Length: 310
Image (cartoon, rainbow, N blue to C red; front, side):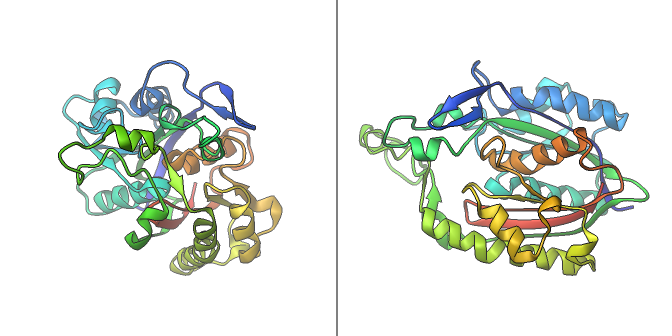
């Protein structure tokens, strides 16, 4: 049976003003594992499963609770999963797609029957909200979503494609702290220069996405053997405003079938796609049986697309 979403839920903290934008911001101390706990419990309830029935926990994040161990271990403990295997996925902006591909491989190989895939980010503590950095800080938000995955007749994953090109890592990154820097991972000079904040090359990042988002969607559609007209909704994610809409236009996607995943809440990196999908289901914009294409492009550079029936 194809890998299917058996349960899906999300959470967004209260909105606060960041620069010129209203963004979901986690005001209380906590990490992505804390944020993902409630949707994790809700997704399991939807799936009709207990934590004891999970074979593995995957956690897609680029803002882990601590340097180590991984957010998956924090989350696995909070959820009460005993000794269930737990693994972080570092696919950055395409993290949910990378996690979905990893989960699909385990499920199709018969290693596990059910996998919980969480995607959570708490960007707010590491953003520069001074005049120097506010233009980047206001692009981000905090949020989490959790999908419970397993086999199900009559739906599921029809195609998934993931790519990476590390040649462009300095175009969109947080340079410090860094293990490659000796003898200290971070110095006072690094902090003075703002190297611990996200930096991005907007022009290059935008052009790369305009070139690669439509291309990877076409690749996934071809793998699934379907056309644009056969997909009920395209959920596209990119940190820069307007890029998802331009990519959809390049594909010939009607406006009514395009969801700009980051438009409402800002860029939630790994959580952007599953939050948008969960919201669309909760609002009745999508229903079980709908065919959806998810695609994202971002830091790494990493990018990918998936086609699935809900």
